[in-house]
Image (cartoon, rainbow, N blue to C red; front, side, top):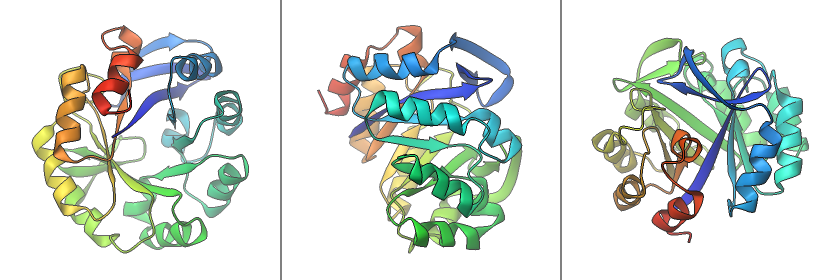
Length: 239
């Protein structure tokens, strides 16, 4: 299973939110580029970067910082947040970003998701951020009436790289992942599923791997010190 250490950006800093709530922010580092370098020096093989400002504003607010992170890390980077036009997606691709996570577009502009996937086959990731099983959009501030399982079915034939499934209730809480919901999505999805939300321990990672997830994003546990990158890599099957 692929391990994706997370770097969430807000106001140029590395932060973590609790349950996607912008009012419940913890700042972990003022230099996200240095965070990326430290992750790679510790053995990270890839990075998951989120432009939280971009997700909220609907445009790539921190594209320049994302580019500096990717250049400094020199490992595959997947980026989400504010990717809502073909121009933005192509700009990130030119910058060398490996994979682009698209969430709100899948619900609000499904034809555009198809256009993005056709233009960048194998590089677009469907981001499913679920609250009580329904997909949240616009930086998690709004919950749609679309069930996560239904959305993956609608886009099953697109040439996507993967689906990132985030359970908002567990995200940033260190309470363990929502394994039943993850198992349901893995069973329903034709694309590789990357799990996100709630990882607190190596045991959590092993549980996610047993369910059949292709990857797992880990954030707060790595910053709080409750889980080392070495232990996380070993649990994921990379170490």
